[in-house]
Amino acid sequence: MQRWHPIWVAVGALGATAIFAAGSLWLGGFDPLTAAGALVRGSVGSTTALFITMTRAVPLILTGLAVSLAFRAGVWNIGAEGQLYAGAIAAVSVGIAGVGLPALLLVPLVLGAAALAGAAWAALPAFMRVRLGVGEVITTILMNFVGIYLAAYVVSGPLQEARGVFQQTDPIAEAARLPMLGSGTRLHMGFALAIGVAIALWALFRWTRVGFKIRAVGAAPTAARIAGMIPANRVILVSFVASGAIAGLAGGVEVAGVTYALYPNLSPGWGYTAIAVALLAGLHPLAIVGTGLLFGALESGAAAMQREAGIPQAWVSAVVALVILSVLAADQIRRRRADD
Image (cartoon, rainbow, N blue to C red):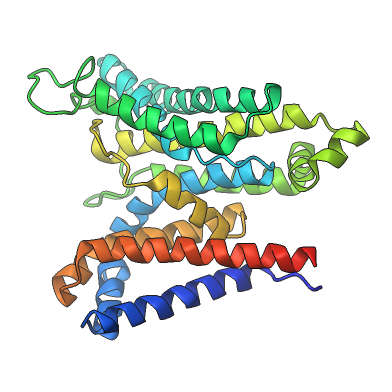
């Protein structure tokens, strides 16, 4: 049977979400058209709103790319959330300790530490998958909880701010902060970095032997192993760890570009939303930039929907959940049609 193109899967998922969301709003006594207008104005209706959307899309793009890399290799890395927190902890530690270092040295150290921490966080479930045969879905989910609670511990213990009043760290050094892309905006260099990572992954999959091996192992790991031409376990291990590095980088970029400190609940669930970001894009690295911006628009438009249409903030979270469910359902339908 003819396979569905990922673009049509994405269109179908977004269409289903729009119908369900409009129906829910109408049943709840809200005007769907007013809500949609507020969403557009709050996300892309002005230069300021657009920059906010782009800023909020950065962690979604990076974690989406991390998930995409793992899924392409046949690795179900559900642990981007924990890897992001590991990267954020490492980034803030280096950013605080590096006071006095020049920005040209400190910024790469902060981001490099974040990537290494994310890679290390993914290394344990990767090893358990390759050497012990333990499914990575359970281990990565459990590692998420460890990462979240570890961040909550360090901001109220060893890394708590000097006064000991608030559950957060001291600010990182000025030299550790990412430069802004234009004066008067909060859009930082992390956006350009996320675009660069997307382009690099696209080139990797399209033109390199490594990318071919990742795609081959992800498509048919047993065949790759039997053929003996591709070391499947090594490809899985490297892809898994690299995925964790990108997710860790997302945490470092958020600390160095937006918050300048670490506190509990730094992420509103970017590591989980990243699954929908990646699947909605058909796991294509360049398309993930677009889907990341879409989810960023939902986040930035939430305040306008609440202010102009009186829609509760929690409703936007329900829309995101609807998108995730629609994407997963459409992707499952596509896979079943492909197998028939």
